[in-house]
Amino acid sequence: MRRSLWLPTALLCAASQPPEPRLAGPKMHKTASTTLGGILARAANKYKWQARLYGTTHPLDPAPRFGSRLKKAETPSILYAHVYGSANEGNPSDVMLLPSGKKFKMRRLPVYEFAQLQTYYGKAVPGARLVVSLREPLARYISMMNYFAHAERDTKKELDGDTTQLFFEALRKHVARGRGGDYQSRVLGLRNASATSSFIQQMDNILLLTTARMDESLIVLRRALGWAPEDILHLDVHVSCSDGVRYDGRAVLCVEPLLKELPRDLHEAIVSLHRNDLLLYNAADAAVASRFVKLGPDGEQERDKLRLRKRQLAFHCQREGPSSTYRPDKAAFDGDPCVPYLINDASFQMYLSRRPPSYVFDGRTFIDKSGTPVKRHKKEWRDVFHLRALQYNVSYGTLPGELAKRLEKRRSVPTTRGAARAAKRRVQRRPGKGHEM
Image (cartoon, rainbow, N blue to C red; front, side):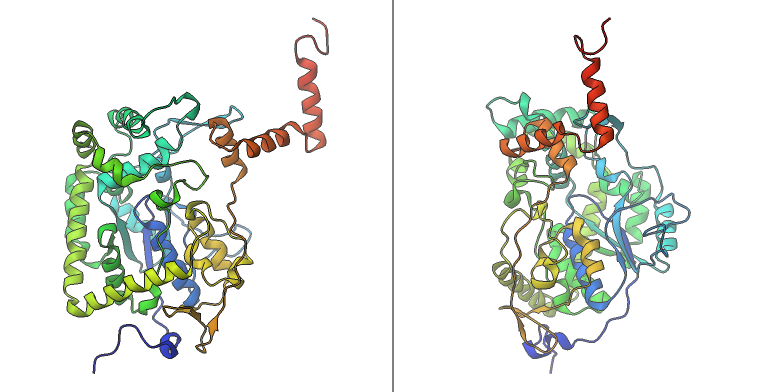
């Protein structure tokens, strides 16, 4: 008799401990990397593994180290974080301008080869297996430019008009400069077609995921690692169409309509920027499809049940705001079993340091190890905007008036003796004030 893929409620929490994984990979923007990171975070919490899922890594660092310099270095068995500078590859600006007027040069992705990336991961997580999540290059490019170029536009200069056409006009300038092209292959250190082809030939031992086949990818991954089916249950986060904003509250557009309305000449120009990425993605997507087909009807059955369980979980754990800006406090993890499924990457390390109990969702509710239902003790949905994000929003004119006034009032009030003295000196130096010339 074949073993059921989704066990009865009484047996859901009785799964055996899988072997500790050795995983490492670059987290890439707009490739469902936060969704994958959440799955890795919940598995690490459940099985008591150490994971580093936030911050940056640098492939040219000869001695990787994680955690506080004042404490013993962390030795993660799972490393899935952004590569230094990769977060800015979709930002078309050359400098970052703070509302205070201070500027600093935009950090960009360093130049390295795939072999150097492998060496880095080998030192950071000895014996690690590479895990990579990829997205169709044109969709990812539009999504990333929407997330950065559109969100960081100066709305004060915009008049009434078609926001889609305004986005395309701005996008043309960035495409002409070659900003953000071949992002996924460059993050992997694949600088040309030859390197990309070589990578494709050795993909058999790489854990691949593609957004077009995310559920299938996760099923293949969880079977390769020996995880339980419930370990890959998830809710999608950072979805532009439903959130309408990014992590700091600035507005973003829905990507799907942008792709459909993309002018032909602009489409061709973007394609020319992604020759390597298209080669890489098409091969990876074909590999994922092939791996899933080999699972046969068993895999299809698990996929159908996973999708059903995701719908049930979305109904049970309904959001009260955008997932992109959700910042729960530590106490929220103790009372609400839905919180680990709602968080984004900014909360991963806090979640892992809190080590709350892990529960299993049976389609109706969460249950503990004894099979007892766990009630939700919902905390207030917190949208916490960091001060820097608030300042950006004020400077771009995208923050609601009351918050802008409150922040401006806070700026005008000196908070320390030093600040008070500095404010006094500024007043004295103004024309007509202080010393006579």
